[in-house]
Image (cartoon, rainbow, N blue to C red; front, side):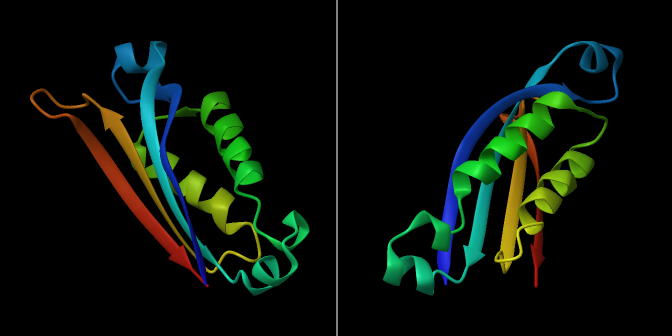
Length: 116
């Protein structure tokens, strides 16, 4: 099993329930962990036999920056759904941080995971 980690993908989107959050884009920080069987990729050394993390990341960027979200939970679930839509993914974990969401806190994050 191969483990792909995408660390600190910083995107801007509309996230929140307060008027200021609804009207202004904010930073979110996304971390992904993806497990998939990489036997063919290791043996053949060809992208056609690997899970293309660039394709997955581009889809996440397009989705996050192109939509509005009230809750971190919803945003996190939609990203997880995008990752899990790839049939070779056996397990995925998505963490979304919202920097400075609380006074005196660096960030607030939600983590969701899925498996098959």
